[in-house]
Amino acid sequence: MIVDRGLTQAPALNWAALEPAFDILCPMHLRLTHTGHIVHVAPTLKKMRADIDLIGKRFLEVFRLDRPRSVKSMGELTQRARSKLHLELRDEPFTALKGVLVQLPDGQGALVNLSFGISVVEGVQDYGLNSADFAATDLAIEMLYLVEAKSAAMDASRNLNHRLQGAKLAAEEQAATDTLTGLKNRRAADHILAAALAEDSEFSLMNLDLDFFKSVNDTQGHAAGDYVLQEVAKVMRAETRKGDMIARVGGDEFMFLIDGLTKKEKLLEIANRLIRGIEKPIAFEQTQCHISASIGIATRSRGDSEGLDALMLCSDRALYASKSKGRACATFFEELD
Amino acid sequence: MHGLINKSIEAFVKDTYGDDAWRAIGAKADLEDLSFEAMMVYDTPVTTRIVVCATEVLNVDCADFLQNLGTYLVSQPTQQAVRRLLRFGGVDFVDFLYSLDDLHDRARLAVPDLFLPNLELREHTVNQFSLTIRSDLLGFGHVLIGLLTAMADDYGALVMLEYGGSQEGVETIAIALLESAFAAGNRFELGARA
Image (cartoon, rainbow over the protein chains, first blue to last red):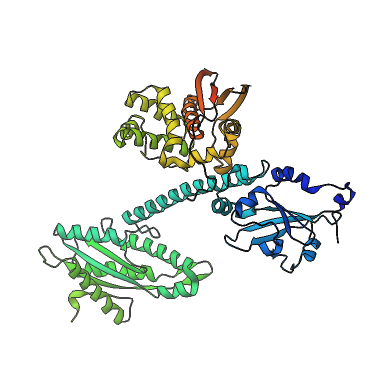
C-alpha cells in the first residue's frame, strides 16, 4: 500500500484530534478507514446530505467514481492517491465533485477532500450554501460573483444586440434603395407608380428581365453575378433620362417608368439601346459574361381607368411575349393578339 | 462614462419622477437619444450635464439627488443585480466595506470597459472608518453615501455616514458603525435562481 511520502516521516499523529482544524480548512473533506468506511464528515458535506448519516457507509457506496472509472474497491482507490478524482453522489441531487485522496500512515485510513469545481453554481442552489460553507481561501465565492456579473453583462449586451438587429430590420424595411445596384427597390417602385397613377400622368411602364443571368451566377459564382448587376445598372442609368425611374424589383428583374412618353418609336429606341448596352460582354476577372435582356412595355395615357395591378399585368404579359419570341427583344402590350 | 452609469441615472429619474421629467431633462441636456444603451460608452461631460440639468429641472439639491440615486441602485427591486453583486463582497457589513477597495477591479472583471471610481477604506478604530473616492465624476461620494446607507440596511447594520467634502477631486466619507447586527437585514442566497 502506498503511504503518502510526506506523511510517513511524520510522528504518529492522532488524526481524529486534528478534525476541528481540518473542518475549517477543508469543509468538504472526509476521513475513511483503511477499509474505505467513512468515519468523519466535514460540515459542508454534512449539510449536503443532512438527512443521511454517512458515518459507517462505504465511501464508494456514497460516491460513484466517474474518472478513473476502473476503480471499484478501496484498494484501487488508494492507488490513485494524490491524483484528481471525478466523483458523483450516487443519490439525488447527483452533484458532480472533484476530489483528491491522501493515504494516512500506520493503517489510519485516508483523507479525501472534495470540491464542486465547475458545478459550484448548481451546488449552492441545490444545497442553499452560503459563504460560511466555504473555506475563507476558497475561490468559490469569487467564481459565483463572476458568473453572476458576467451573465448580467451578457444580458445587457444581448438586449443591445436585439435592439440593434430590430433597428437594422426597420431601416431596411424603410429603405428605398437596392443596396447592390443603388437603383430603387420594389417598395420605392410601388410608391412612385402609385403616385404617378394618382396624378393621372402619361407614362410608360417597362419590365425588363435579364436573359442568361442565371447561368452567370451558376457557372461563375455570385461575385460575378453581383458585378454584372452593377454594370447593368450603369447601362440602365446611361440609356434613360434623368427623371425616369429605374427599379430592381427582383433578382434579375427591373422596372422602368418612362415619364411623359408613350410614343412607340421613341420607346422602342430606348428599349433597343438598353438591350444592346446590356449585351456588351462584361469582363469579370479572367472571364467574359454574356447576357441579354427581354423587355415588355405598356403605355398609359391620361384618363385611362386601369389601376396599378392591371398596368403591371400588361407590361408583364408583353415581357413574356418577348421571352417566348426568343428573348433579347422588346414587345408592346398593345401589339399582343 | 460607461452607459451602465448613464442608464442607471435614466432608470432612477424615470422610476422616481416619471417619463415626462426624463424627457424634460433630456431636452435641456441636448441628448441626441433619450434612451442610453447600457453597453456603450459615452463622453463623461454627457453624464455631468444630465446631473446638472436634472437638478435644475427637478429643482432638487444636487447632493440629495445623487444620494437618492445611490439608494435607488441598491434598494430598487428592478435593480437586484447591483445589490447582489455588492453582497458577494462580504459576509457582514465590515467585510463588505473592505471589499470596496476591490470594487474598481471587480467591476472590470465583469465589464472590462467599466471604470468605477477608485475607493480606499481606512480603519481608524474598530468601528470608525473613512472612505476616499477618486472619480472623474465629481459628487460620486454622494452616490456612495446613498448606496452605503442602503447596503447597511441590507446587512442589518446601523451606521452613520458623513460627507467629508472634496479636495482636488478626492472626496471622503466618514463611516461610523454603531451596531453591526442591529436588524435582521435581507437574506442573501449565493445561488439565487434567476
